[in-house]
Image (cartoon, rainbow, N blue to C red; front, side, top):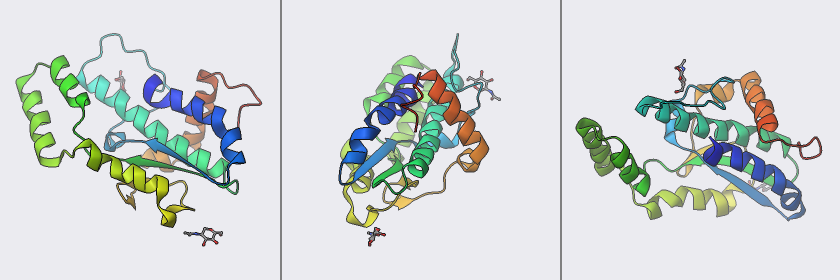
Length: 187
Ligand SMILES: *[C@@H]1O[C@H](CO)[C@@H](O)[C@H](O)[C@H]1NC(C)=O
Ligand SMILES: *[C@@H]1O[C@H](CO)[C@@H](O)[C@H](O)[C@H]1NC(C)=O
């Protein structure tokens, strides 16, 4: 949560002043398909795992990636009309060292075969995986696109919880407190 979400949430706030001064700015959050499998709530937003098993880790990862989508949406709304757009992107399944590390942690043969097979079938190399992000960052057609969740080149439907405005606001408000934003730094 710290690396994937809270850090980005805070850094983005601290850079808003500069971004607004630029002729135009695009903020992109690198989310993931795993956002669809989450158990995000006010309770799990900053959850301390004592003995995490595979599912716990998976859910925390999904929670961080969903939090990004929800934060991107609220940033987008709050920054409407400033020339700064905010979107989230998921790069599908990319073959990165993340998977080799998972192999090392989970020595279950079936799990390793599952990971290996899905990488072979769906995995793309990091260059391919980066293209959706590059597209969202530079495409002229997407100049005004904001509050979207891109899968590669086209907007996708977001995970259900991202459409619950009240829930998104609760997560946003709690995040402001966790990262210690001062009243002036809040948007
Ligand atoms: C959500 O995730 C946390 C951490 O993995 C876990 O302890 C909790 O039981 C989960 N809650 C639900 C409702 O699945
Ligand atoms: C973006 O919005 C501006 C102002 O409304 C409009 O003039 C322009 O055509 C739009 N660009 C694209 C690519 O949609």
